[in-house]
Length: 87
Image (cartoon, helix red, strand yellow):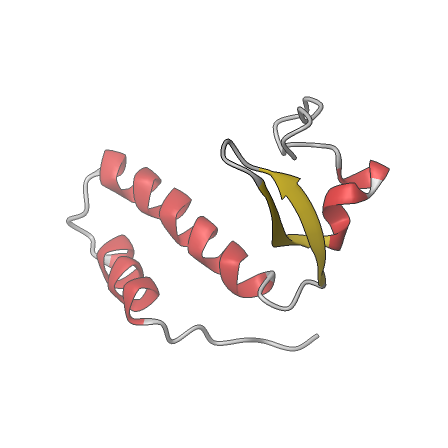
């Protein structure tokens, strides 16, 4: 198993505050959420994407989307519920 050190300044800042013994519990919990989100971005930065055509409110447009977006196994929104068509 490899270990990746995330050196992004925002992650470092939040980790410092998270580690501080004087950080209030409510801030600690919020920081854990925020660091988790930032680490998720780092962990998924190399996910394969593909060109897709979408309908915007103004016109059709080309965009990039995760290949997992179209996979039936990727239909969970992470809270145990099924995704809407927006996923």
